Image (tube, rainbow, N blue to C red; front, side):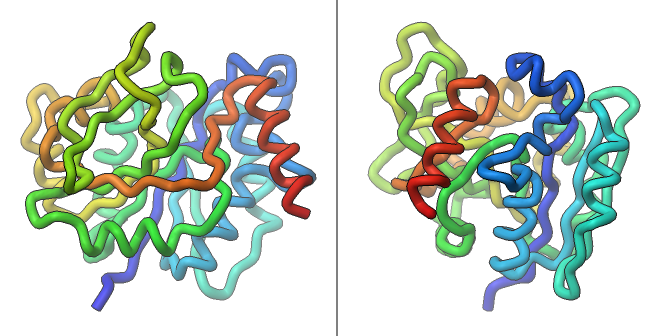
Length: 239
């Protein structure tokens, strides 16, 4: 039987590369065909059966709070935690680890665009190799030098990780969407020093213990005007 799950949506980024759009709009609220990215993730999570969502905020946090006041769900609770100073991807997870007690956890970057649902990814996590404590979504990127590139074995377990190399050995990219259990949080708490960044501090220490699930559907980091335009076009084509 699958455990119920909860998710943390990382929504505190500054969106520097998306200026001037992000001068007045936090990146997580950038519209894709009329619907903010954050809203798209909330819909996916509710459809997948998520129990509760925690959203970290920082830049233009008042606008995120205002958006969420208009969000209603009878099936999933949503709340925010404000970070006066950014804690980092791993730091935010550790600071809110009690939120996941008794639940499978998802860590999601709210500024990514995902075509498709979360159910298959969650199913892959529940059927991961027994040695793996973390499941990572991967996707094929056209710009591998701007991504974290993974190398996997025949069991789809991560054996090498290359963060934003000029000439990476492949185009299978880390989607920065993770599923985990309590054993993973226990491992994070034992790391010294305590990690703050997922890509540079956590993943290199977890090689051989990360299951991957590869999506063949579109998956984009909405960090540049070009990727934003691509995502908007994908949604229009789907309509």
